[in-house]
Length: 290
Image (cartoon, rainbow, N blue to C red; front, side, top):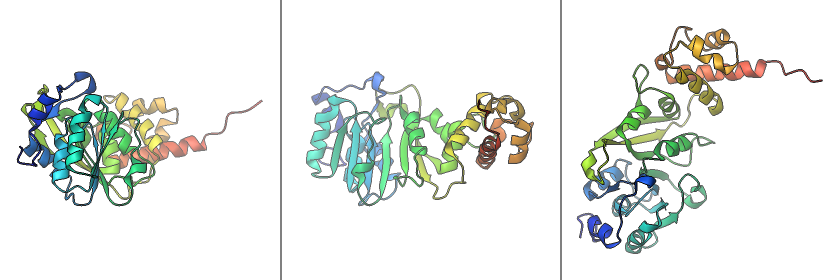
């Protein structure tokens, strides 16, 4: 039995069900229940909260969330092989674990949430982690359905999420995360914590939605950051030409120097560029019709 609950140790569960992490699914199983407990606690007090978990695998983090008092866990798992192991966890915590077999990129959990606070806590499959995060950060309307995101990434990705202007890691992902959330790295996780061990260190990132981000259309911000960081070594007066508006007017309207480069512009600067870009587009005369 484990120190966390009176269910069998995860190694025994994996052996008994013949489970092995599949690279094609981006899987790396976390077997240290002390560590899964630390991840769960990083999201804050759990009493009465509904947690959405993506990629529970054999259920290590799931068990930690439930043992620490989470009201309900909605776990989305694509790997059918893990269903029996998760069913054992569900039986141990009657009525508190709902397992959805499906692709997290396609499952909409919002109709399942009901009333009260909902969070996302997950050791994300590495091959879809960034795509999932961008999807959550792009949620409309905002504030979103979740009160926080506590997520495991490869450390290099985690550093891109929390990067500040002027750093090599600063890019489109940092602007999107910084615009809509406050994000920080909670702690790092060594490769030895996983089975099989990945080749890189991982990090747990905690993101809290901003109640009132700077007003801006997401589509405009995406276009501006894509153009700016697509040629990040060039000055903005050159890299933003692909937007199809008067670049000098765009930069002047946003209060940004023509000689600046993308990595020097903070979130507020990109919001100003996005809003000016939208205004310039709206002001363009409509094409003539025959």
